[in-house]
Length: 169
Image (tube, rainbow, N blue to C red; front, side):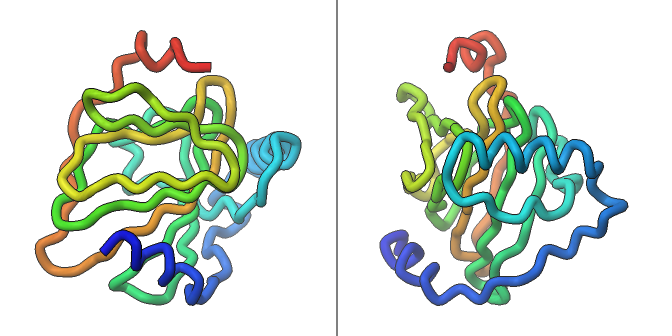
């Protein structure tokens, strides 16, 4: 199924982010966009602050919906300096990450962290514990997509070990 997700992404209808100027600190947004541009890659819209999932992230993140299909949501996730998810598991579907700009990492439980640079993709199999986000002291954007249907859930777990994370470059 995950192979079909990347193919389906080519037919995604793009939306304008719904965040208003009052929802995003303009200084922070400008700073993140400038940094991502300097680091290379395509800079996607920041979107709105990712408040709904903030309790499962370290640092500030933003979410921009890029799809009109509720069964195949496609999100651009922007991670401010060092922001990353907690460990989590997607039950019933894989997740595909497409690095857009900046520098990030993902890690599958029991494996070494893998760097994500613009243009790189990672497929996280269904039912696998993992985390993803920005490298320390760097912002990062990736597109995340996964199928959504009955029985598909995300189980949020513990934070990533701060000492281990801080060893990343």
